[in-house]
Length: 310
Image (cartoon, rainbow, N blue to C red; front, side):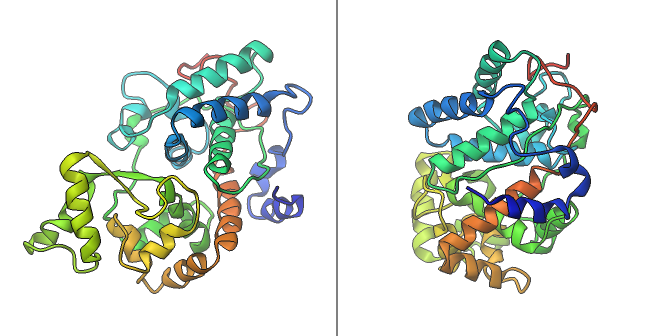
C-alpha cells in the first residue's frame, strides 16, 4: 500500500483538493464502500481483463475535462459522453452496477466520481499493477457539455502532451507514467494505420517503427479494428511498454516519440529499467490526477443515478 507520508507530500502540491479529500473518507458513512467496489471490479475483470484499460481511459477522460467529477457519465444530448473522443469509452454498465449496490447499502453517500477513481485503482491492481490507497471525498459535477471536451489525438507532439499534464499541476514524470497506462491499452487501427502504410504521404512506413512491428500491425489490422499498444504483455500492467518504445515498437506516434524526445527520453529509460520505480511513479501520478479540479464539501452533489443529475 502507498505510505501515508507520500500522500502528505502530495498535499502540498494540491492543498485545496487534499484539504477535503482523505483516505478512508467513507469509513464511517459507508464502511463497506471500497469492498463493494473492489468485489464488483474483480468479478468483471474475471470475465474481461480489458476492463483495466477501459477504466483507465474513463478516469483520464473524466478528470481532464472539468476535473474528476463524473461529468463523463451523464446521458443527455450534447453531454461529454457524446463527444467524439469519448466514443471509445466503455464500462458504463459496471459503474451502474457498483452504484446500485452502494445505493442499496448507503443511499446518497458515495459519489460517482469516487466510484470511477476506486474502480480504476482496483482494476490496475488486478492486472498486476500497484495496490495503493487513494483519497476519496469527491462530489459529482452539475455540468456536462460536449464542447468542453478537447482531448488530444495520438499524433500530438510530446511537448503538447506534456503540457496537457503540466497545465493540471503535474510534471514530466507524471505525464510519462500516466501515458504508460498504454501498457494495457488498445488503439483503433485507423489512428495509426499511416505509420505502417503511408507515413506522411511518403508511400512507406514510418522509419521510426520497427519493421517487424510494421508487418505485425498490418496482419493484425487486416483482421481486427484494434491492436494492443503494448505488443509484449498487453494485459499485464508493467513497464514492458517502455521497453518496447526503446526498441522502436511504439504503436501510437506520440508514444514512440517519448523515447527520443529530449524532454522525455530519460524518463522512459528510467521506467524501462526499473518496473518498481515506474509503478511508484504511476501511483503518485494517479493520486495527483485524481485531485484535479475536484468538487468537495458542499459543492456539486452525490448523484443517486450516475447517468443523471439529481
